[in-house]
Length: 254
Image (tube, rainbow, N blue to C red):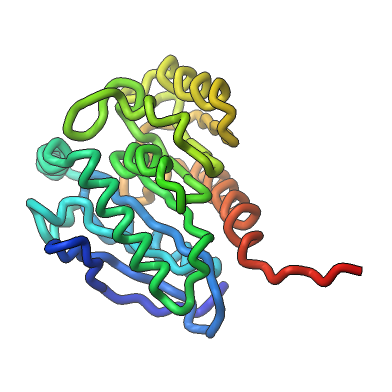
């Protein structure tokens, strides 16, 4: 595990300054970049912890605030009231703004000396899992880990065709993680996502666990340690094989 440093930074997107939590290895080097997308609860303690965990594995990780336009510095826990408020903010987001903010975050990472600019991945949870799937269409993103993103087959933030419609635009590798007891994502929707990925020839893997929504978050009642451990192992395999492989120095020919 790498020693890391972490801090809040500002990501510039036109006139908008987006608060973002940045974590990076302290050792000099050239590392892949990973964008961490929040749940509906903002860049809270759990998302900051995930960002730091990724940095300790040898990545420069950043979690932008997806509610910056209307709820700056918002973070919440997991009470019923927190869920209601988080959903209200989620419903104010728009796909074009999420794409734009993500592109600005990519540009921020690519401007860091420690980041290998052509090795960018994402990971997202809950609402952030949906966002991770949505922004996988951006050409700079080589690896996507989307955790239990509801609504991918039925809607897109701000309205329009369901996010599933962007599937043909995905150029990287996508891993998606679901719980078979998740009441917000019926298994038929998971099968629909898998059919679309397969139909369009997207490199992908779907992981289904005997777990509920939010199984990765150790601050939620639905946390499932076994599922979370396996899912983390799969994410690290994805990032290792796709992102770190692209940052490895070329081997001399014999």
